[in-house]
Length: 302
Image (cartoon, rainbow, N blue to C red; front, top):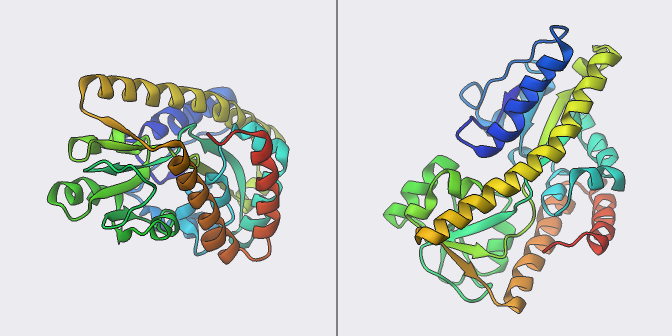
């Protein structure tokens, strides 16, 4: 298994590490799972070695390979349990999208929390005018639509960039900003959170086709278990961190008024579909968007 993150991130500790341990235990020597992190292959370069079979499984984020396959970014835009997303039919579309890189989706790790903007100063509107914000391709459509200036930085650069005033804020997963202690240099944590961070567990199609049914069944079974268990643990973990940090005064929740909150969420949803999923996936994108529009009618996005 190749992972985009090491154990400094809580989602690796609460999803990937238990997954590896449980598979090894359940299959009792029939398979031995080992994993390596981004020190082996940088995150934005990991899809290719999975595709050619250097690794059997890849634990990553779809935004890291939008140039090759962008369809899974649609999962980031939807809050909800993975079991509900499976039942809605999203996995069939995802598998179709990843065929072109010789992979299929084994599972998703939906963290139960979304994305935030960590700011050095608070704001009271969904308007980033005059602000330089750290982005990646995932955040850029929303930031630009809300009048912010986009600065591309890697995750390890975020702390220093905030500290030195290179940026006024950082767009990042709500869990990562706490794991990486960005509140030490930017204490305003924007609310509402937008989307739900959804990582993807990909498996090489050639590897999958040659494994016995017993192995595949166990891998799917463990993955579905962890999709549910890890989401609950990650929600609780995030809530506990927020409670402790706000109580100590190290972090302040920057709550937007209701109308501005709705504007933020809607802008993220609409711009991400238009400028990422539909733009880069003209065939599968509309089908995914249609499913997503139906999904949000019955699954609250707040």
